Length: 159
View 1: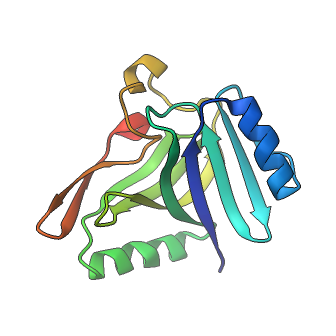
View 2: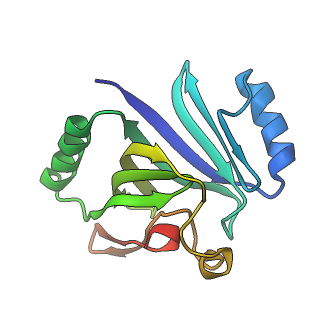
């Protein structure tokens, strides 16, 4: 079993950012759309994605990706045992992929996605761009700190 670290950032100028990150990583994106690009790097094992969908520039969410359903189940059980508030989304289409996933949120409000990609899909989101323009992220939940525990509720393109 193997995990891959995931970072999703919102950028202002996609083409300029693709040029920068392609030079930084020494590789072209493995997936490229009019509003999105993704690099699946092996060294380091990183799923790095950028898009123009967010209202705020910079890091949108972090995560861990697995190719194994049992490992995803173990990550979900670990999050539950740690008493993290969790939002589960299975068979959801977002960010040009269909995935099983769950979200947890750190005390600062940073969303963490733990997921298994099941298939590529042809659209960023099943919702229209207008419907998701006010969302803070691609699929990332909004959060509210409540007594040290962060409650996550799905919003954005997956909610």
